[in-house]
Image 1 (cartoon, helix red, strand yellow):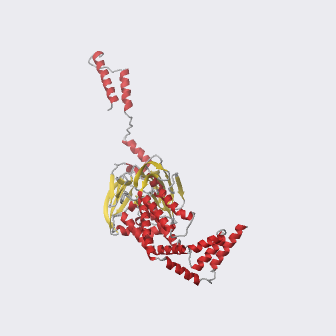
Image 2: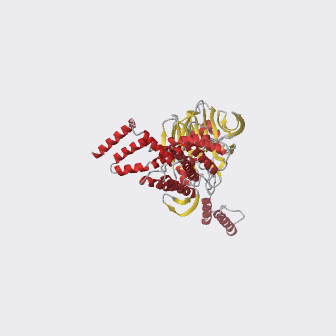
Image 3: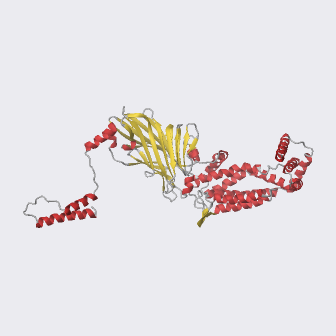
Length: 596
């Protein structure tokens, strides 16, 4: 009772007491006429108490029966929570609708070190509806009785949670199965009897998820969060990672849908296909929600039965690959010309080294050493190619003095010189080009490697995000408000490497200076990228220094010059190859066209 109600009752009691003491004519109390004070008190009291209309049970039953028919009895019950868990996940279900309320990933923590809830009842809703003779009914309106059993399936202990709701007319059963060591939850839906009650041949699901921020860097999380789906034609597509609201009506059947964020995915996988799929996503700008995603779809019913699976877990490539066709594509491994490096080399290297080392900084160093060792023949050929160009620099300088005013003639004479000396101008560049897929592959691997999440090394608290060595009191455009020391070390080492490399080549002018500009540009780009990526590039540069220093000790410029002279004597009367002749003719034709 609040203050106003108490005051009203006190005034009401006071009026009755005063009236009985001074105005009553006998022991019998006549009917009391309302006074202004009494009316005011009653109004005050009534205004504070909400009006609740209590209907008789018979009328409630009549309303339910009119809406649900024989299913009305399923709407009576009490909501309870039921747990289904293994060593990887803990899933909370509600007996109201037999639906998932919360999913906790046991091996992971949120950025503020709280239990990582991939879904909860505030952020995610799943509504299953099915057509009946009285219109669509939502399973969330029904109360189910739970029962948990355990059995072995394919030799693996499996927890099975069965929800049942029914009457004399039939039964609705929803069953969930969770194997030990798995992030997958198998769901089966079944209608027993209820002849003539359900008229549809599909069960419809509407799933909306306000993707929660699991990482501290909200902007980076939004950049790498997208709604993915896999078509029956075995091709994956998505709504992208843009900030603008998007939606799509997919005409082709869909095999799975994934609400994929940077390191985790909540997905639904069809036993056959989903039909009539409509998806949408939007990005709230005034909240900590990463993205709002939704999907509506129809699940085919065969003899009143349907099966599907959920995946609630991390974006580990090899884990996702075991789920279903194309599900591993929820991890961005890069464009097709570099993704093979990550899929077939780096992922397996990481998994192998994790068995023996638990420090991911050490693992990164070992990966650099292994890759550099494997590519060392290319590094050697690149160095020899640049050395050959360096020893013939006097001949090239002579051509420049002689034909400097005629670029076409200059190119023709250079090609003739290279042919006579047995030198290829691309011999120093081609091995480097062949190493480029490995450098670009890492650019995609490290920002998506959940293995690095919340793993520390040296001064970096988390290798999956930038190392904030210095926090700036201001923001530098395109750079940020912090200084990443690993990025600075990478930049300095790249500039030193460029300076050292320029001593070995004949590059001049803008091409020579470009090598100094690129590291500075990458410093701005990588300052907010994962510390693990910058550390990899830094270690890679340092190992390259060592490789070239060793090669330099074993390579004698005098011997290279001797081989060049030997080739010059051997090729003095050498005829031009067909390719060289065609190339020369093409250059002449281009020069003539230019002059015209």
